[in-house]
Length: 396
Image (cartoon, rainbow, N blue to C red; front, side, top):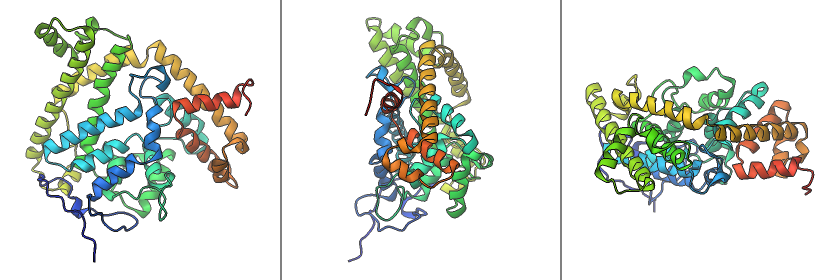
């Protein structure tokens, strides 16, 4: 008996991606009887080793600095929750939005942007490093968990969303660090010159909503700034002032949590209003219309974008460049640089699996294997591996 694909009867707008009309996978597979293709993609991302390792990768604070601060994993889950809610409210495919949201940070190395910057420096003679490209490589090559193919064999729509959720990327293809994308695209065209689906755009703006709100939460909780300063910052300030007037009995902890919760709600409402207006003004009637629109469909209002820019400026000054964060960044960069140099010079000290991958390759090939090994580390594992390699009191 021929297996019938899972039928999905949710009501969607005309410009939503239809899982029943997916462009498919690079390697043909029998359909699932219980899940749409996009739901299957979401589940495959969740089951990856790369996704599990996000639990101890830096968002802003190094993972060992406290149990209550966001990590890449908790951030990705929060992005996915916002993306799913936004997509459902807009009548889009929430499984696809969630799949892209869950996958968007898979390529991040340990120690956040400091780790990415240091690996890019280390890899400068060998093609550079970009976490977006690394994310694509994770899902098309580096994850090895299926008998019939490398990677996850995600649908065309998920791959498209992963690599261009922020818009067309053809201007980046000349960069050495984007060589893997260019090579993959030559055999499996992701139409890198167009915008991505509305679902992928929802995932991208959900990332903005999540990290701006939760960086306020984490920075406040860490004592890098306080209520008296935030009440003068656009967006969060009016919310906190209103909250304090309504509920003067609340302690600072509840003011912080309630304020962030309300700010998320305000930003979501703003996106819904502006996106519906954008769709009506542009007359989009299909997913292809969204791709060919020539501009982003899913956006904030201009007023919200201005307020967010000022909020980010505050966070940059008071959080991202705070001396405590700078010290962690400095330590992280030294750890990765020293390990990279050692592994490249002495590949025989790599774990067996990684040495086997590097064996017989030229220097550029070995460097990429070393980079892949380091990029996959958690913060904690990188710190411990560095100790094993450079602390003379530890022998193994």
